[in-house]
Image 1 (cartoon, helix red, strand yellow):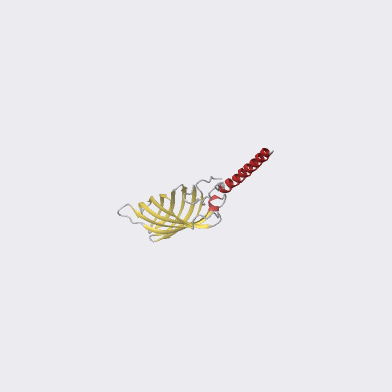
Image 2 (cartoon, one colour):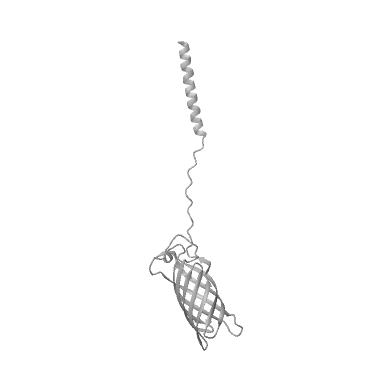
Length: 195
């Protein structure tokens, strides 16, 4: 009887010590790490390389009394077709230009309705027929007031812009000119399709 009592006591003590050991083991364990939350992506800038654009512009400036033209292109390249009048010469010009993103202000913020200023540098090479400049190199800067909604919306999405251009004649007997144009541009983002 004494033996059975002492065995019971040993089992009880053993059970209690195992139980307290199990509790101490769980208290010392650090909690399991929580699964990582997916990192929130920074808003994407969809105005860098418009996939397709068309624009109408007009203006004038020093040595170029009037200009009206059409710009069409996308993915960093445009074709500019225009009519202008320089002193004593009406003429038509055709120009291939780059459309390189320079700066955007403010940076993308995730609000597709918010307007922002996008500036492009547009180096180009062209030809003006019917007297005047002839073959020329061009340096242009375009400033556009975009919004992500305008770049992704179907239908009418015309946006105002200003373009400043300096043409340098590549023919020794001709002069270049300087002009400022105002216009409207309709563009879609690079990954957006035409509806």
